[in-house]
Every structure is written in structure tokens, then in C-alpha cells.
Length: 374
Ligand code: GLA
Image (tube, rainbow, N blue to C red; front, side, top):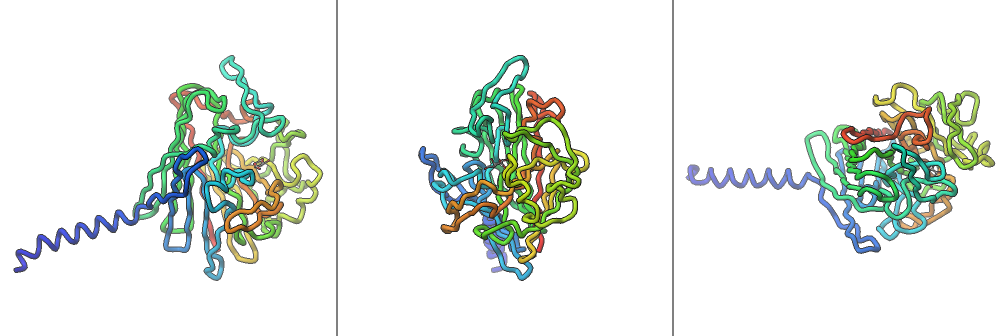
């Protein structure tokens, strides 16, 4: 009898194991369609430590990051919307997206490369911001493939930007991999890009964090540490002057922890209208090192941002204006901050800054790790 049962038992076991493995790979769920009718998928990554991350294919965008506080209460700590329509609305100020091809500003949208001058869209008078208008990387729909392993699970997003898209030279092939650890509450973002013509590149994730939970009134009560001794001062239009300055004895000195609200008002009348500074991360670019630690004293939630990039743009949500986000919650002025790891702004026009030019045959890579604790 056993002789006959054994093969079918084995089949049952194998099928069960196969379906278990299958079930662990995050599935693509529909998140709706863009106004042009392109379907948008969303993936949910989850671990056993209370962390859940959702990423959608429009703009390779992080829509949700749920993390526990000191009492185990879980909250979503990033701003966003409940549907594609929200992300396509005026109220979307790059929430959670992958910004590029060149995140941050390019002076007057102009640069010269290999004796050719390129003119990009001016979408942040008088400059170019975050890759352009219609076809910047945050607005296009990426393809996606999820994965699962013993230590982590994630999704790899891919997009090929044709030569000339948004005025940039070269066919740019971009991959962004989002990996949630099963061991700790850590989300890693890895970028990879190649080109067939020399082209500037600077990708970043533009998540807005409020560790008390998105929709909380303010982020000014959070405590911030920046492992940055220097920053790049800017002109009236937020383009770097090309000089480096010490943070020492300025309101942007976060070398020791400070509450964000303590000194932000000192920049109320500056061109940045609050914190909107690119800081030079201490240590060697190209190596993963901590750049910033953000802590919400009331919930105990802490975020450490580590990267191999030269800089981090610390933006204190100065342009948030009370737009309605997830669950109809309002996102007022300075109710979230961005910590965008990247090259320095306007690097393509700044001979003093590390080069953002990607040559054919080379690889652009960028690693960013968001580690949550409570
Ligand atoms: C970046 C810029 C800010 C602002 C936001 C988007 O962080 O530095 O000035 O444009 O993006 O609103």
C-alpha cells in the first residue's frame, strides 16, 4: 500500500513546496491606469518585523512604508496618494518617485557635452528640475519583476529612455531594485544605468518622510543628524555657486542632533524658504556610509539613510501646501522631509563637482539603504 502511496505523497509535497515558494514572490496587483490608459501595477513587500513597503510601476515610486513604533504600532511614514489619479494631479510634488534622468536642478536647463549644447525644459524658472515635464522618469511607467529569497524580497523596475527623451542625449537603460530585508527593517534601493551616448545622470528617490505617520501636522518636532561637515551654497535660483562651505555655526549644522524646527525659520527669507540644501556627506563617495539619522521622539521611530553617493539634498517640505493625500489627509507646509541621496545639483555645469557624465560602456550605480528602528 505504502509503495503506491509514496509517489503521490511526493507529488503532493513538491506541489505544496512549489506553491509556497510561488506565494512568497510578491504579486503584481493593479493600481489603475494612467490618463493615457497605461496599466500601472503595484507590489507589496513585507517582512515578519512589521515592515511593509509598496512600490508602483509609475515612476518606480514608493507609495507606502509601514513601520512599527516603540509600542509595535504600525504607521505609514511616507506621503502619497491612494490612486494613479492622485499621482497624476497637481498636488503630487514628486512623492516617493524615482527622479531623473537628472534629479535636482540644471542651471537654465542648459549644458554642453562633446561640443554640443543641449536645451532641456525649464520647469522651475529659470532652471530645469527633476528631469523635465512629460517624460521625466517619475512620470513614465516602468516594467517590473518581483523576487523572493531566504533573506529578502523585492522588485526590480526597468525603463529604457529613448535618445532625445526630455531633450537628453543617449538611449538610457535604467534599473531600480527595491529590496526589503527579512532580517531587519531595512529597505535597500539600488540603481543601475547604461547608455549608448555620453549623457548626464543623477537618479534619486524622492520620498517624503514623517515618522509620526503621513498626515501628521508637522515634521518640525523630528530630530535630525547629518553626517555632513560641508554644503554647497546656492544663488537666488538654488543653483550652486560652485563653492563649498562649512556647516559649522550655521542653521544647517546638524553634525550633532537638532530638532528641525529649532532653526528652520532662519531660512524663511532665504531663497531656499527653509531647508533645501545639498550637503556633502562625510567619508568617501563610492562607499556605503551613513548620511542622515531622522528620529521622531514621540513614536521612537528612527530612520538611518546610508548611501555611496557624494551628496544628500535635505528638503523640509517647504512647498507642501495642504494638498490631500492618502485617505484624504492633508499634507501641510513642512509636514514631511526628503533626504535625497545624489550627486550635487547642476554638476553637469560645475567643474568642481564630481562628474555626472555616464559614458557608453560604463555603469552608473547608486546604493541607498533606509534602515528603520524603534
Ligand atoms: C527638491 C527640490 C525642492 C523642490 C522639491 C519638489 O527637493 O530641491 O526645491 O523642488 O524637490 O517640490
